[in-house]
Image 1 (cartoon, rainbow, N blue to C red):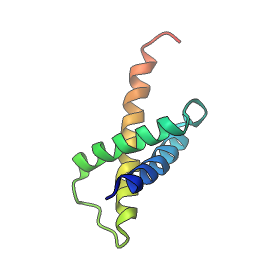
Image 2: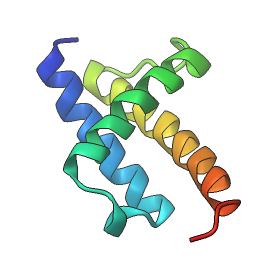
Image 3: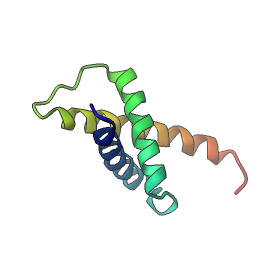
Length: 84
């Protein structure tokens, strides 16, 4: 997958994950992209090639979304212990 497609799919996955996790107001577009790309790495490591759909980008989006939600869950747990 090309770098441009990685950024676009990562941005969409990060944005969707931040909306689901209720962190959309505190994250900008750059953090959405970073969370989506890192989430794609996490999802790819955990899921491997279990998700195979006809349009390849849809498989990447679902994998990145699942990984981004896991990443945001971990970040919420870490930030919960800190004083705000």
